[in-house]
Length: 585
Image (cartoon, rainbow, N blue to C red):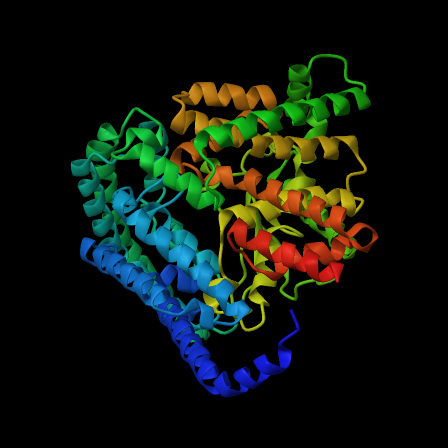
């Protein structure tokens, strides 16, 4: 390797300047592309800009017209051509990872175009009927913030009309969502139709003002908000209600499988590859799921024996779903329990990590308007400029169906060291372009969240057998997903069959199980990523421990996994293999 070093050195001196110039040209072209595309993304999606903490577009929604959609697709194709024209070999190792990640995203974005997913712009978990939710991430610290929101409110009718136009196009193309999901939407639309403008979800920011809004401005802002609700927003939602209830809902399809859509099999195959960032087939994923379900059931049997429960596993599940000891009586008590759980986890993080992200996080309730139709909890990342903390949102709807034994793994997943750690660490990546710092590859990010649930053992948190049962229940939840998602979308399973399989293998409550199955119907393939990602991270951990022996440090490994930011699983594996080789010396 080193035998001809002197001769090579002379050659390198001769070619250093041209090579450096070539590298700089490629690097400049790459980062110009990243900057251009980041700005385009913010312009085309002002709501995402708001979530990122960029206030430049807080006075508008995105353009959902067919012309704007086609223009955006053309811009995606142009961006793909631009990155393919850049010489990857002339880039640094860090920029090669940036290149590969961006290329993967653009290839998938262009491949997705043929499926015309914009033909179904409304889901039971959100759409134009839940636009008011954006207010959750807006600052409302000044009169300007309120005037921006008023402009957005005033523009709601345009976006409603554009959405109706897309849905009409979906009817013509035969691309319609399942009726069983769409039956949840009329109630969501109805929540926007109010007789008293002050009871509109859009009006909530005007109920209370911060000190940064002069008292002289407040009455005028409230009056304008009430006028817009009365004259613009309510009539727009009445139009949507009439169209949805009378025309769209009756035409929604009775089938649930993605394969029932035009080109549906190819669409589901694409989604499985996209979400897992692998080439696994539906059959392979289904088999992995069945194997994991069997393994976790055996572990649950051991917990049942440990606590001395007499009866079958199904009876133990019923006990866990129904015994009053596992439930808080009020939404406020449930919220306080979640906040206490977060504070219990925080001081133990140093047992599993050397690097703790700087960005703080909080615990908030999921808004009442969407709580009945959404998941047990979710995480909202903080603003990329640090102006807003991350938030762990918890579902307080029906506390009697929210068992306390699920709180520890859920908090580990959604808050710390799960999603909050992963997103906050990504924002701190040195010199990374913005698309990398804010990236969300489901297999990596949700795989990390599921892996983080298991880190509770390393942090000494699972000292109660019911908490350990909660961890198994949550791992089973993600294993069941592999079976029921592929079952419904690739193997002809019915919704009832999927619900029954879930209930037979998990102690989660009926409310959660039905919501979860409907989520998998409405978002095919997404749920496959969690367990596939966690299995890969766990495999890499076992590999590192085996190869490094006594030199293996769990805290260093966990920090190294987070050091890449969210990337495809193949990129993560290459990075960890290189780290292992470096540690081996």
